[in-house]
Length: 130
Image (tube, one colour):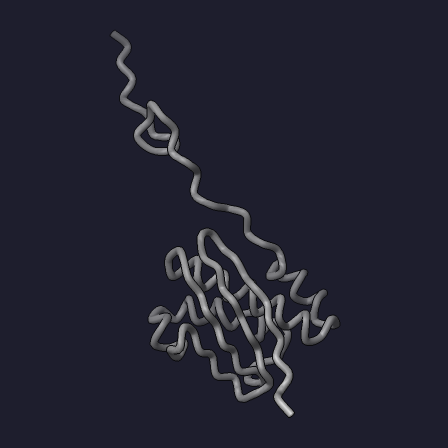
């Protein structure tokens, strides 16, 4: 009999993470690499582990992630979102804690589009009075 897996998709900025959690020892694998190798900065590793620390489920699940798009910060946020949704699939009783921490809400902030007649989204040419 195969172990029960819980799947979810997390998104942040341009990043999309497909997350699968399996009961295990707490090993996190991102794109076939250990988390320590994939995310060099400790802050990003902390972001990925936040759902487990909020729900007090550290070292109870192995996490397998496929993530693409965006940068490292967006990818870490997408993984956090996906892990949170997968934990709710595992146990609905964890939902209030994750909801209170704001991990189940998709962060809708994305890059504002560039407008014509401007250098960037909001930066304009220098104003000349005369």
